[in-house]
Image 1 (cartoon, helix red, strand yellow):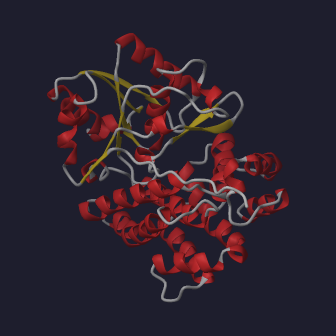
Image 2 (cartoon, helix red, strand yellow):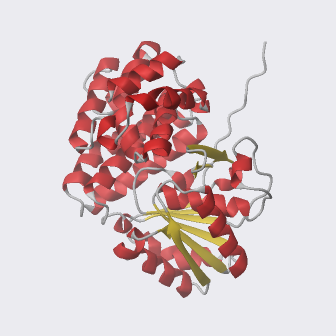
Amino acid sequence: MSTPTPNFFLSPPRIVHGPGSLSCLGGEAAKLGRKALIVTGRGSSAKSGSLEKVRQALLGGGLDVTVFAEVEPDPSVETVEKGVALARERGCDLIVALGGGSPLDAGKAISLMLANPGRIQDYEASAPERSGPPIVAIPTTAGTGSEVTRVAVITDTAARKKFLVFGNMLVPALAILDAELTVSMPRNVTAATGMDALTHAVEAYLSKKANLLTDPLALAAMSTIAANLPVALDYPEDLEARQEMLLGQLQAGLAFSNSSVGLVHSMSRPLGAMFGVPHGAANAMLLPAVTAYNLSRCKKRLGGVALALGCREPSAKAAVWALKELFAETGLPAKLSDYGVTAEAIPAMSEDALAAGSSRLNPRQPELADIEEIYRSLL
């Protein structure tokens, strides 16, 4: 009999949540470091006022503060390198990542590279050995779950591909989830990030690595997101719905970080790398189609998904229907061609998706032709 593979469950040591919880940042950050590098996007956090709130909170805690506001959507290798150079120049011993998944992932990568040799691409295939400065993660969107995960997604622009970096040291030391920082999200960002979180939950539950610790989190995330995403879309100032969405993304993040994602994510990454399709929007479009593809291999599990999404019957077909209905309610584009994706690119994208590790953990093992057909069905 083969020896079973042990499961490990990882989570940030401290998670602070609730409207107004940013007020604790200064005191908590002062326990972790003295010179903070704020890693954020190129404009949205400054425009919304979140960046200044975070800066003032850190100054109030007695920290020196340097701002690195150069993270683009799908952060590149070059951006990570710029952040590392600035952090070294200023002697930063704490990374405060503020924004959506891109700044949070960039902050993790910068921390990693401050302690490990080589380039960030070197850690696609091998785990880093040393921990960098502690990371404080402050999401301003409700989708990626990056504030609680041990993974960062970085884009190699020269190779036109995204790659994953894994490591226990990428789990932030502190996550702060404050709904007041999310109310400025535009509707399309609320929709895309919300569907991203839902995808994490569904794929974590259907993954071949799903387990007794991740299942309750995945199901709770589905239920929370299905109930609150429509409210957040129609009533963006509703702090209760916004806070519930943050908790839903956190639950989903803990679930997939400790199990895995599946074919949806394998197929969405080439869309982002080759055509700039936003990650959440790509996941949203792919989720119903890939779930329908998986149906024959996980009918019982999909029955659980159906109940979590509010269906009356634990039916696999009802789960697919509910996902389609929720996606339609978001108003996000329903065709890949809306983003300029062409039929000619499908073979290359399909090969990329098939090679991804998450494809092997999908409940139904895909063939290259299967992936090509799903892409074509969405053109």
